[in-house]
Length: 314
Image (cartoon, rainbow, N blue to C red; front, side, top):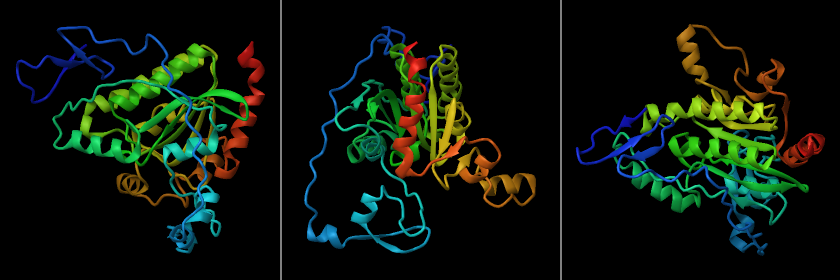
């Protein structure tokens, strides 16, 4: 099945296959699934003595409104020491706090940029975000070790277009399932997303089916998939791979759901229960297996990997 681009010239031969990836009518595109390409292990950043300005810099907690020293927030993994509010962190910072130093190797996937709707200034926005965040898209994936246990890890970055899922993100998530399957390793995915990417229209929605199919195939082959839901996990991401984990854990206070509470209330004409769509409410109703504080996340995931180590080796 092919989907032609909107608003393209007649001599432009770019089209899409039924997964949303671009294909060429003149020459077959390379199959990115042929081999696993990992970059060199990430270098452990050297600890630098904070400057005088950094020592006095403060940030305001969005929940309790207390002014907390930035150095204290960094030490506390950006969890407010006063009220326990879990503030958003970048994908790279989460990886650094999760894996053993010097063990993470990025999964290299070259996916060409596409603008299927000719959305104004879309390419410029993506280019700026790539330079600003150091990510090529809204998900950072690779292979690393957590307390000595090897796993494939993918972390969605809300700093990159709110972690929205388009063609590239859908392909990367699918690729992580395939790599974990091929390497016979557990897969851990941290989700943080506003949903499907509107700039890519229906092709972004196709990623829901694509990633769900990849999760099902991985499960059929006996793979262990741990889904870690962080704030926010909404829209098409929550309606696909984010909620298909064998084990589902969440950070405290994370908003998890498809549509927002206000939209639901307007649709059904009723007031929603207190805390609806928050991690605590979902745990109480069996949707989430366990709520894990950010400070305990590394130990908890290591424990899960240790408990399933025998099955992985079998």
